[in-house]
Image (cartoon, rainbow, N blue to C red):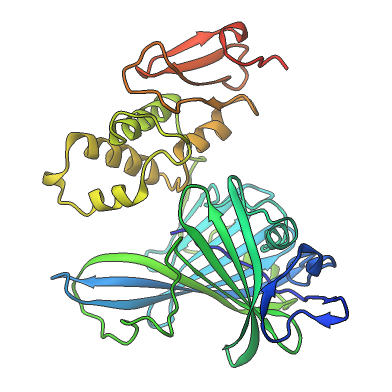
Length: 392
């Protein structure tokens, strides 16, 4: 589940008029020129994420919405605490992350276990929602994504607060558009919530047809459909001890090295994805297969899957079990290769074409380039053998 999180903001007067008035219209980046509270220079902050998950009954005929709440707190610079709750509101787990140390303490309350490992997300030392400034000022949203528009969409009440709605439409690489709705307190202009769905399918918990359907004990499928970031508080007093990476007294403790993807696994993953794509290497190494097609295959019984389908699911699951929830190719590139040395040119290459170059890179602390081809062979090559002038 990819959940996008935003921050509290105070917005400006443009051309003598408060842009958070009634009506709709595009907002230029200049509307956010000044420092934004909750986005820039945050010292402490708390918020809640509510996730909405659509459950399907065992017989596949009924659906209902299940909610999950997580409490978050932040302490400058780069310290996070995330508390997972069950349906009764009881704490079932805690993740404490220190980005400066590059470590996360995962606490299992029921089993009284604590594991020190690599963070699930690399956030750096910026404020938790600092990247919102990149979106609304520079129209940037991560690598390969484009913010198509930012506009005003009337008003709505959230957490008993009347709020103006600002909507961003974002093109997520080769997927459908993602819609993000931001709710700003009409009186203070402070951000009080963000609603997010899946690309191409925005979810509104207030209007969903199955929002009031009763839950059943048995289910056959669960799918994330949306999230709400809300209950934001700026500058609360936080206990520094709550961000300690030391395990709680009486808990079993374990240290785990940072998970990574090997060269052989990267090649195996790309090969499995290419075979899944009718023996065609993908246009993007980071988005190596059609997600809708993969999801449909994942719903099949294991015995009904083809060998090609099983191979892709197996290599993907193997890597995800290490808590790597991103492109395995990207993980390999960042962990194993020299900066800016990874290049992918596999568009149009078919599996088995031994004379077609798919990509190349230089392993860290190595002077040689490694090239891989349509038959999945890997060879050491010189810079002169590559199609680009890599020396520059």
